[in-house]
Length: 332
Ligand code: SF4
Image (cartoon, rainbow, N blue to C red; front, side, top):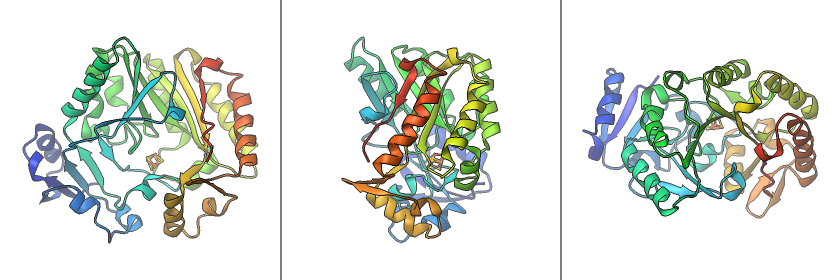
């Protein structure tokens, strides 16, 4: 799967670097000074690179844990995100990472201890308040977990800090390391879904909906709290039927008691990212569907957005209490 690994000189002897290199004995190893030399180089084609992405092992120096937008909150006032990884194994057509980054290579920041230290500092600063951390902003939180050991390194921190909550956002079925341990209350595994037909068209290389749902049910069965993320909502002329079927399928199977939160939001992207994606995929219908431009964003026109949000909200709130529902009414 990974045939080339770039390694920053600074972390060449970091124990996590050595453990990862051991997993890929046949990969070509290339030393570099800073990951940006490879990752930010201008003359890269995201689409071509995605076919054979390399892994870059690096150190994150600053901006390790950052405030996250209020619209994405799931019940706390204090919200932060961190990215131990940039980019994703999967290939969703609507993914904003394709607009954000020049490169499709995967960057893994191996200095987890520095992320955890910053998280601890933030908790200490906000004495007695709940602090939520989000890990799936620039990657899928679990897709590479067997390689990165992300969960086994971060969950002990959560265990000893009940005031913190970690959201693992994923479309993956890589839940083995979670099932091996006792569940903890302050970790939410949040699965993203779109209806089957949309997923088949737009979510390439992603485990299908049945497999994702099974992973979710296995976690609930083991006592873990899960989240449901219907973001982005994708418009089609049959969206009402497609989303009704998806909600029926999910809500007929999950345990509402162990469902921490449900959020949803319409498809929207920063304008620059949207234009870049249009160029990458000129034949993609998603980018030719009705769109409106507001401030710096592009998304569905207000009437479609509100219609879809209201439709979905009506069904979802029949299944879970209002305090677990977090619609993102962000204007585009
Ligand atoms: S799973 Fe998420 S991060 Fe990965 S490609 Fe799809 S939208 Fe992007």
